[in-house]
Each structure stands twice: as structure tokens, then as C-alpha cells.
Length: 449
Image (cartoon, rainbow, N blue to C red; front, side, top):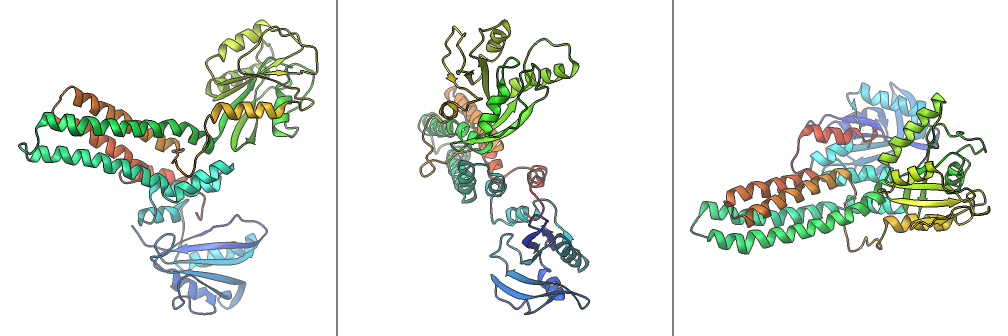
């Protein structure tokens, strides 16, 4: 790839103690030495920090510390310089403009990490883990990202690919030297048992993947129910803040209100929805339509009932509508007389207004999605939706290969499915795949990362 020199501000602009302007490429030391008054950065040892001043045609811009990193032991495997300047937006922008005027170009989003990937320092799963660390919203999410950055996902995928390649190699030998192995022996002794072992391992990985996805992304959670049963009060109680307006007037919530809560390491992406009822109010009807869409997309339904009212036809309709979903029935307003004559398997009795039994509700949700103790020391969890999709693709290809082996189809036909599975796994770590995928992934990064 091109080794032209790129530059970007790597810290959030605003008033702060310091900001960092980062450069990478073949020309960093020439550019840096042309604006830096202090020790020669080109002659400095790698991984050292130097005090000096940034000048523009003799005019002082700022007093700085400059970090020197020399290839190949750098983040991008290219020469790098990081200028630590005072944390003002104007002075930082001034240094950036000065560097560009000396021949560097502005980096694209994620281009530093993309260069680290393209130069072989990290694989694609490690690159994605960099952004996962930045976006982590819980302790679990941070630990998952850290494991990915250390290469655990890469090692898991590589071990599967190595096992697959061993099977493919057996087939190649048979094709090249038909007398070397009897085809029936090859199928019975190698193809079927080894493919079954791989499928078993992938099956276990995919079982854990649902947990990993929850830990990384959280759970899209819809709070639903008839108007005035206390949905907004439940949202406020979980968030521990008054985010939603609470009144006795039906239809107060006319649009979706969103929030996030971390319960025991799991993030709930909460959506307080408009109550579903027949309404002639145009705005309320739009809110109700949005509610129905969110119910379809939600991974968890928190269905709120008013303990002080008997079940209505609307309640029954909503219960039937959400019967197939992960659902917790919340019996709210337990400080009032109970008029509900039914019991529900997954239910919690609370008073959202008085914050009674909220901890029990949080525990119920956590137990629904984390049915086993998280073992970061002994297990590797796939959590990225792209990784999971490619793993499912490899699983489907291996099942095709296994079926073909049982049907005693020619081994070169079986090999096609095995190679497709190998390719799918390779796309997870970036060993195969097109440039458009790579560009799309890194475009989601921030500037300077």
C-alpha cells in the first residue's frame, strides 16, 4: 500500500489538558523536524519523548512533547510521530494545518488502524476490537474487546481453518494420487469423523455466540402495555432518572423514549413506547405504529400491567402479540389493591413509583439472557454480528459437505463445500474478502484511530 504520510487529531477537540496530533508514513520525520525546534527527531531513538516548540516561519505556535516511534515496532508498522500539545481547539487545528502544508494529507476515518491491518500487524478481528474497546458500555463488553485485541478470536478461527485444511489436504492427495487412499476408507476414516468434530466445535461456538452478542451489543428492550399502566415510571425506575414524563393522562407518551441501563454487566437498550389502544389522535396513532414496529424488532419485551385493574381485551391482545418473544410480565402498582386474577410464568411484581422490587426485575432479566457463568479464562466468545454470520455460513457449508460424504459423492465435490467453509472463516480474520468490505469496516472508525 501507499506509504504517503497521513495526519489526524487523535483526541476529542475541546478544552482539555492535552491534545494529540498523530502522523504515520515515510515522511513523518522530515515534516516533524521542519516545524519542531528541539532535538532532531530523525536521529532520536524509537519510543522516546522529546520536549520542544512548534514554530511556523519563526512564530511560536506551542510548547509540546513529541513521541517518536520508528518502524516496524509501531502501531501501523510505519514511522510515526505524535505531537502532544496544549488542549485547545485552535492551537491543535493550527498544528494540524501546518503539518498538512508541509506535505502530509488528512487521514481517512480509521486509516491508522487500517494500515496496521494491511501491514500485517493485526488481523481484522483485532482491528474491530480496537473500536469495540472505544465503544464498550459495560465491564463484560470491555473484557470481550480486550480478548479480541489480544488475538483470541483470531487464534480460534485459525485453529478451525487449520483443521479444515488438513481434511482438504487428504482430498488433494487422493485426487493427485488415486492409488494412495481408498475412497471409501478416506470418507469413513477422515471426511466424516473430522467434519463431524468440526461441526460439533462450531456448534458450541455458536451457542456461546448469543451470549457474546448480548455482552457486546446489549439487548433491545421494549417496554409496552396499555396507556397509564406505568410504562414510563418503569423506564424511570430502571434508569434511576426522570427521563419520561409521567402523568395520569392517557396517551402522554406519544413517541418512543429511549435510554440505556447496565444491569450486572448487561446493557439494556430501553424503548418506552406509546400505549397501544384505538385512538383518533393522529400524532398518537403514529406513536402506536412505531410501538408495533419496535415490538417486532425487540429482543426482550417488558410487558407492564396495572395491578389495580383487571385484564382488558387490549391486554389479552398484547399478550398474544408478544407470546413468542422473550418476555417479562411486570405487575406494576403493587401498593394498590390487586384486581388481576391470573398468574404469569415470567413475571415480577413491583411498584415503579415507590421503586419497590426493581432489583428483582433486574435479576430476572439477567437470568433470562445469561444462563451460565461467563468464563473468560476458558472460553472464547464470538460477539460481532459479522463474525457470527460468517461462522453460520461455514457451519452450513460443512453440513453440506457432511451430507455429501454420507451420500458417497465424489470427493472433489465434497472438497468444494469444505473450501467454501474455509473461505468463510478466512473472511472473519481478513484472510480473504474484498477491499470494499475492508473500506466499509474501517469507515466506521473515528478520525485519528
